[in-house]
Length: 307
Length: 257
Image (cartoon, rainbow over all chains, first blue to last red):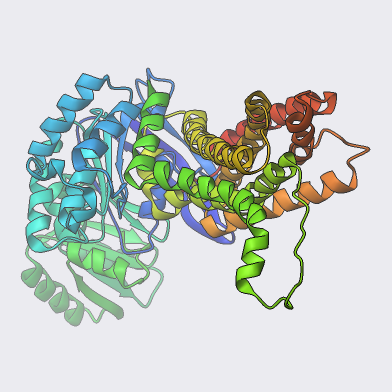
């Protein structure tokens, strides 16, 4: 439904977003996950049209309106309102700006206020709202014109546990009716609210897909071995003949041995290596979980060659 | 209609924070200050004292039009400062605080956003300046001599054009920078520069907007509208439109955050 092509943004000498390409399918909920400073906010702002990409483009499928903004709802990281207005007034105001008629804007505002749990507070001035209430009002204002794509920038990161729960429940409902893209730096939130993820680090999308796919891709039992000789053909044959080995992959000098039973396979390989005096220089038993993967990214370790 | 939505919200804001009340009040006070102090100057000097016994204070009463022009001089100094102060954050402040991030992701035309705000502030300022001129005229007519109301009305109409021009410059500066203080500085610097240029090149370029103030003296005295004033007004209207176009264009091409 929306597609970005090589989206790039540079501020002075810094490339904050670097050739980001992805596609969102209609009616999916996607988490844009990454550590602080990964370029998540900049990506969302470009998609919302608030800042212009240095290069690259954004395509919205089935675009009937001239103005892309008609189809997009956006909640910034720290939403600011006209504090002298009431919640209801503000919703009606932005509804009217999104080309709703007066009565539709009114009805939508009432519905949304109830829905985000601000039914009573709708007639209070926004200046008196708590952080959680502002966040919920922010979601309501983004939804006012029933956008095809709803983008939320860190919708739960700044909230206390109760506010966080409220907003997550709300997002659960919203993803039934619209395509939802939200950014977060908290893996649990991403996992809980969405079924797809885009993992971003240092301006790049480094991993994407459904959680299950990504998990499967990384939570694989494997043993990595490397030999002191360039010709490891004979050892490969022996490895392949082991019953516990599913398949082999050679990457440069490393041999990745995919197995089911990690403990048994480790013993079997060590046994055969000892028996035939293999010139092993590297032996690693690996099992990368999503958490580990994410932590690696957060710790700014080199992840590029692991995935 | 989007334009009315933005305009109504702006007016509502101006009512809720009492701009619609205190700005005209300030101009009314500015307007009556000069007629009163000029008229009562001998008494004031007398009361303050310090003059030797038997000194005769004989200050000739100035022409009525001069007193009204003094008030307009006040509007040009303090009045302009107030106009700039109340409108310096209208766009810049919204962008700085982040409200613009919510407003400008809605499918709103940038020119709508700019002109609705411009209209709101123009209305407030023209109303306030007119009220100030009326109060000055009332006291001048009471304490000095009658100035025909028609003359004052014509003068106020032309002077309003200069006021709207100031508002427009300010709105344009609002789209250029994000910090309200800098907006105020740029606007005032621009106006001062324009006034200096107007004074120096008055005979070469008699259409500079800041000269409107000098031309309305004649309107007040004779009721005639000098030809230069017509030309200046035409140029001013043209500049106002140009500035509004530039403002909309800048905002559209500028990154909101």
